[in-house]
Length: 391
Ligand SMILES: Cc1cc2nc3c(=O)[nH]c(=O)nc-3n(C[C@H](O)[C@H](O)[C@H](O)COP(=O)(O)OP(=O)(O)OC[C@H]3O[C@@H](n4cnc5c(N)ncnc54)[C@H](O)[C@@H]3O)c2cc1C
Image 1 (cartoon, rainbow, N blue to C red):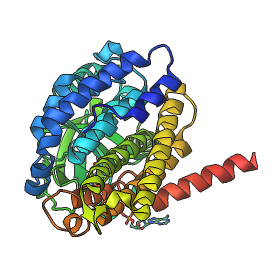
Image 2: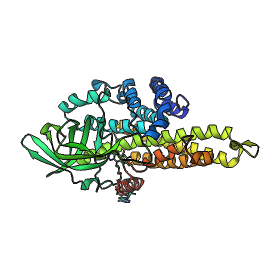
Image 3: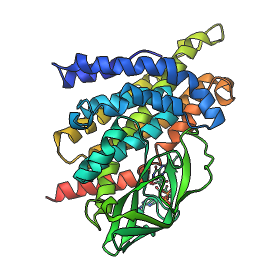
């Protein structure tokens, strides 16, 4: 595993000519930790499907979540481009670890943007320091892409809200300390902070899945779950807008996860193609292998540029909905193709267990589904195109 992906360095040099070295130092510290502590556990995490708590906590201790958050809350206030580069490195080492930390980051961002002063003071410092783990609960059994049709209810009662219903496919559920939950009040979808120890908060069994097997996934159930009115985030009825904004940011991070998975599969294939011989020569000598390598490297670099561009736009304060959707659409489909080619290049050794090659494909598949399926992203990109071309 290379310490830092050279292409990331070039992007940082291009965007931040006077400060790129500082950012590279941060990334090198993270990359060294991943190489030593996270990557060696990735295969076992996949096989056992056990939450890689040590990897996640180690990254938190290193300051991983601090990268792009304000100094006021203990952050480093570095550009989001640095944050996505770091996420790519984590995903290259272990995609399950990356997914769990990425959802945590999405909640931190939601709290920063939409949380009250009191909510930020109470939770943000602890979350950014990694003392607590967060979870984002939007999807329901009957509403994934169509999240606005959620059925979970929050009814006001005195100085509280009573939540009833359930959320499906929730990452970090059962492990997290704080849940950023969307539930419907009379005014529409609204957002609430639900701490892990409140009465009426329950979890389904861990859901078994083909990839991202170390990232915990459960149903979250609310049975007369009472939270103080002060746990309402922002304004009642605005929850869907908040969820959308959080997902725009989350999509850039999922794009970075996809690229990290693709980069890992690609580097493994490159090495193998020089070692494996057929017809008296390394398979890297065949033009068809070289074509796969050339196409994969080109697509990964294109995805990295799109993803860095979306992160840069996000920091610039302009609308980045379409850029984030394009970054995730392209990077996740690139990752699937790259991981498919990695299996092909490894032949039978890629298809069978042992070399850990098919894990990349299984992990990559999630990136075309979570935080907006490829179909929904195309809907968003087209909507933005049509709106901008009519003005
Ligand atoms: C491992 C994993 C982790 C997850 N983590 C979280 C989490 O932490 N928090 C959370 O809230 N959710 C989470 N999810 C849920 C995820 O966001 C949803 O699965 C996803 O949004 C798709 O929703 P769905 O599964 O209900 O599919 P559906 O919405 O039922 O879609 C099924 C198919 O129909 C297509 N489709 C739907 N609508 C349209 C349309 N308008 N046009 C064209 N095609 C359409 C979809 O693209 C898809 O191919 C997670 C899911 C997984 C698998």
